[in-house]
Image 1 (tube, rainbow, N blue to C red):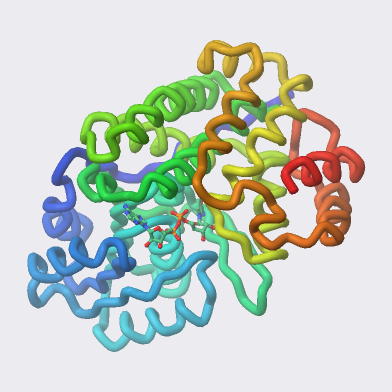
Image 2 (tube, rainbow, N blue to C red; image 1 turned 90 degrees about the vertical axis):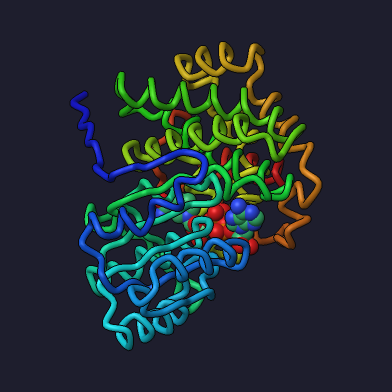
Length: 345
Ligand code: NAD
């Protein structure tokens, strides 16, 4: 089989306090009139940036929400146009990054992002947008943020529950890269190190959420995981997350968290190399159980039924997934998918 490996290019600046370099990094990009997008949890960082930019901050929008609804983008777009913005800085989780990408898709603004979760969108050329309850995804190298600033300090206040689910969301990118049929030596190395940093670093962060070094380890694992997501086709796990999340409007990271162990249990017997790597990383011959135990420690919805998914809605999801399957090591049949989602239900 012939395999293609593409490397994406963004400038990445990282370290404790790295957010203070944003004005200088914007200047380097050529951004002189900037719309600042900061989600609720990043309000203080947004205020700080607006003050540092002075007249170069031409607008402020705090309304980014999950799944990038086009109506929200339209409001932010009006602000960008009113301020004649040439650039956008997004500070927040995947929702803020997604809004930045949606603005870039419509305007070509220069995009610098300061991610505050482990979702990984900041290093992918992928945008998912929703309109009328339907989520559509597109991939274009032009959507990749030009500069990514990882400031670990912005993650210190992340609640334990969000830390866990967002980290497992990142782990899912690495795990799917490990069992991808088109994995390469590079993607295997990235995914292995990513899973090692996330699984190794998460317990320390959960025990001491404000530990800067432990948080930095996790953030770097998430960066690698996002890089896997950008470069390797995702399989059944991400397909189920898209199908279930889109159909029932479910929270992104929580959904990934409750699904991953079930898909891992189904896939690993068909992916011996991934199974071997994950066994070495987890120190267990049952990596799905290790992931399942992590997910079970979440203090929130842990089953699809807890998220309000109706039992009679599972079959149609399984049929849709099996009709146009993403590439996956194990066969994606209606029965097999139904078994996986029933176990997660
Ligand atoms: P999110 O951005 O919606 O954030 C979840 C919640 O956590 C929000 O209330 C937010 O304000 C809060 N939050 C964020 N950072 C925080 C912090 N450091 N401390 C405290 N609270 C914080 O969630 P997410 O999981 O990061 O992103 C989900 C969105 O990103 C979805 O729309 C998903 O489709 C998209 N996504 C896209 C890609 C891609 O490659 N295109 C990859 C991953 C996720």
